[in-house]
Length: 251
Length: 65
Image (tube, rainbow over all chains, first blue to last red; front, top):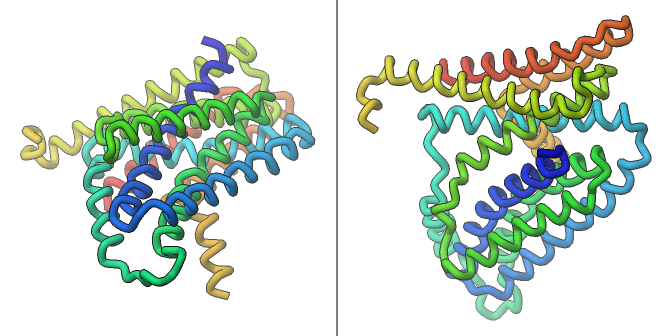
């Protein structure tokens, strides 16, 4: 599998996970308070995200490639290790799995209890929550698109992967008419964490002057190494938890 | 001032996250790799090793709380 395909899959999976979470927020607000202001908020946030990609993507291509890889590698490692750490804690049972149904209920209750001015043409609560939800969930994806795309010279492909995932999630959300509980979000987050950490390690080391044995193919080895180490750490943590809390064995 | 603080807090959380030691470790490992390669040592093994050790240490801290 070439690194371009892996790039597409990594951006697609990261975007899908964040889009599922954004969809939950947008659905909860839209269902309770109406769609007009909610969708204006979604549109405004999408424009800001597109502007981030358009402004920063081409700008990064002017930076020398070794500096770019060093900085991008460090950033991807920071993001990747955050994702991976959370995913391992969830997979080993130390942190509760992310539950879209519970998140939907919570957002819906908050949207119901918030005050509203029926005379105003715009429901600013809906706008703000939808804008913030889409922007915050999407900002990480925008960074991944910009960093992955510019480092490999495939900004368009990275943006297309993110857009495809977002559109797919929205279409499925419209069909299901509810939060996407069946998307294996935690498994996807685990996979994205491994890929981001793998690419971050590969590019960061290259940017620091390393010549990888096997050249570009080494990225697959690095990803495999990160995956194996992560599975090992998950297994070890799960075993420790079961030893400390035997009651969790049946859960 | 509080808006500036919130802005800074947002970016700190966004980039550094829950464990600042991991971020500091990444910077230190990259700097050490750069120093070694400048000294003609092709230290390709250093960063993968550092990443796994940092992840293990961070998980250990998180599960001890």
